Length: 119
Image (cartoon, rainbow, N blue to C red; front, side, top):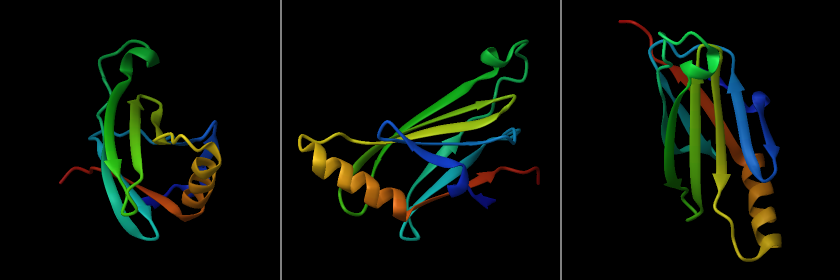
């Protein structure tokens, strides 16, 4: 388990992150704002039988809401070369309000990545 904020960045109003470890048995992202878990998103198991990296990619999509009523979508990819994710805040009509909320969330968000281990 580890905090991944250092590997997370804001790009085109999207929070993106990655981890080079392979999710051999899957796992989950624990998404927190102000240390409150707002969602636990599954990390899928990659396709081990694939001959090429692009064929090993498994994908998981989830929508969730934070405690302030903001809506998000999360997309997680898992492959033979690690895990990547993208978290998007639902767009709003007022662009300035949207950017302010996004900047605020970026300062308060933390993502812990947890891999399932053999028992």
